[in-house]
Image (cartoon, rainbow, N blue to C red; front, side, top):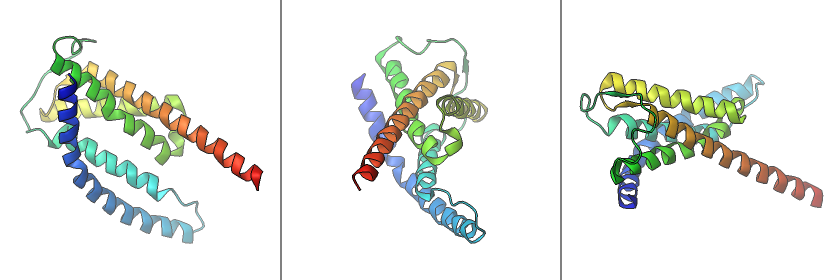
Amino acid sequence: MTEYIIRDLSSAVSYLPYGLMAGALAAVILSVINNKRKRLGKKPFDVAALTVFYIYLAILAAITFFSRESGSRNGIDLKVGSTLGINRRNDAFVVENILLFVPFGVVTPWAFESLRNFWGGILFGAAVSTGIECLQMITARGYFQIDDILTNTLGMAVGCLVFFLLHKVSDVLGRSRRIRR
């Protein structure tokens, strides 16, 4: 199973240039918008966080859609747990679906303050995963699987926990620096 995961993660790295190009474009557009917001006296947003969000979104789209030929897969699987335990390849897919959304769970609350509550982040991840599954079904670029939605949502939850932990550590370190001054 590990060899499948390593091979698939290695191939996913090939999508990084597409993500970086999308991120560069997003950074330019976001910077222009942010400068206009500042001139109008509005609160600026975090360009770095939003840029990383768009980089990850582009990579996620490449992995879930553009790496597959249209019409190559179709089907619906509404049985919970149908993927796990069949063989090592399918077990690897389960782990990979969780890993796919962990970075999304970290980046999303960083980019959007409105999603900085645990359940809001998880619901957002479930909605994005459901949207991906629906689009894969419509374009026949993937199977609509309940297991994928559940494992992606689990990955989102793990990522959100990582974000909140890092955010808490950052707050504690920031407070201790202010106290020492």
